[in-house]
Length: 484
Ligand code: TTP
Ligand code: MG
Image 1: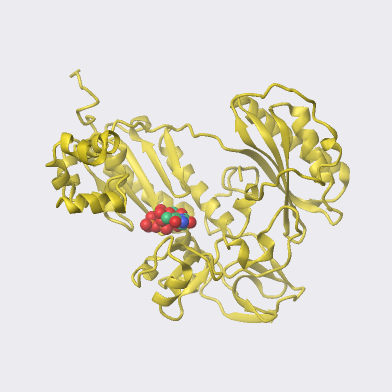
Image 2: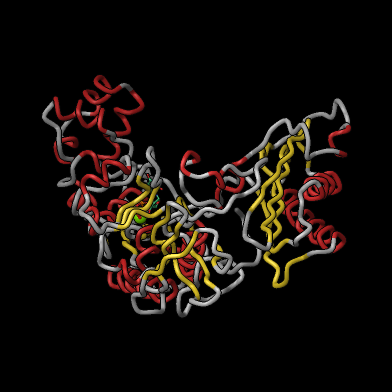
C-alpha cells in the first residue's frame, strides 16, 4: 500500500458524497399543490416585513431569492405567483424520508441542514469506489429520493473532499450529478469564481477582485505569503489551502445535540387526566434516557400540547441548575401540562429538554416552590422550542405564532393545510375580510378548484400535511416520536 500524506495529497478515491435538495420548501409545496407545479412559488414570511425562505426555480427566473424581503420578490414576480407561508411539518417529513434513503446507503451520514447531507461512501456497501460505481450510486439515490418523496429532486456532488463534493452538488442544479475523480480536483476547481469557495463572502470577494483575482485559478496563482499579508494568517492560509483543493475534514455522523424531545400523536384524543399523566411520564422518561445516554444535563423542560382543534400550546420551565434526574424532569413536565387547560382532550403531547450542558451545576439550592406552580411566574419561556410546529410567518403577521402564554387563535396562513367536512382536503389559497378561500387538491389529485367560506365556518379546520402517494409512514418520518 502506498503511503499518502493526507494533508497534501488528495484521497485516492472520490468517496465523499454531498446531497442538497433543489428549491426544497418550494418543491414540497409544488408536490402537495398540483395547481402550482411549473409556476413561480415563493415560500417565506408573507407579512409586511417577511423574508423569502426560498423560491421555486420558476420564481428565481424573475430574480426572487432566499433572504430577500418578500415585498421585493412581490415586485419582481409576475401576477399569479404564489406567496406561501411555510409548512415546517411537511418539510420535516420529506427531509426525514430523504435522510432515511441516505442512511440505507451508508452507515456514515452527516446531516448538515434540513435538505443537505454528506455521505461517506467508504462506509457504503459498494464493490469499489471507481467513478462508474459511485456515479451509479448517485443516480440510484436520486431515483430513490424521487420515489420516496413523491418526486423531489436532489443535486449530488461526489469528490475526494467535503469541499469538492459540495461544490459538485452546486455545479449543475437542479437535478445535477457531478463526480470529480481523484486527480481532477484542480481542473474542476480553477474555473469557478472565488465566491464558490466556502468562507468567501462578498467582502473577501471584493478585496480579491481589487487585486484582479476573480477565479480560483487566479487565487491559486497568488503566493500564500501574499494572501497571509493581505488577509491575515487564518483567512489567508485558508484561501491558499482551498485554492489547492486541500480539505481534510471527514464525514461524521455525530451531531451536536442542542435539545432532546419526544412527542406522540394519539389515534384518539386523550381526555382523562390519568391517561395524560401516564403519557407525559412515558415521554419524560424517554427524553431522560436519551439525555443520560448523551451524558449531558438540561436546564429547561418544555412541553407541547396539541388540542383537538389543532391549536398548539407550549410551556417551559427553566430550572435553577442543570439536571438529568428522571423524577425532576417528569415532575416539571407533569406540572406544566397540569397547568394547561386540556379539558377538551389532547391529540399530541411532547416533552423536551433544552439548555444542555456537559456539567450538572453543583446543587446550591433544591428546586423550590416552582414545582407546585409552574404555570405562573415563569422565569423564562422558550417559544422557539415549538418552532418546528409553527408556520414560518413572522410573529408580527399572525397572533397564533406567539406560543407560550397565549392561547392559539384561529387564523388561515396562506398555503396551510385544511380539511372541510364536505369538500375534503385542501389548502388556504387566500384569506381576509372574514373570508377564506381554499383550493381543494392534494399531492395525488389533479389541480383542484377554489371555494370561499366564512373564516369561522365550523366545517373548516386546520389539518396535518397530506402524505404523498407511496410515502412510507415509517417510525422516522411518521407521526410517532421525533425531535422538534
Ligand atoms: P437551500 O438548500 O439553501 O435552498 P433551496 O433548497 O431552496 O434551493 P437550492 O436548489 O438552491 O438548494 O436551503 C434549503 C431550505 O432551507 C430552503 O428551501 C428554505 C430554507 N432556507 C431558509 O428558510 N432561509 C434561507 O435563507 C435559506 C438559504 C434557506
Ligand atoms: Mg437545497
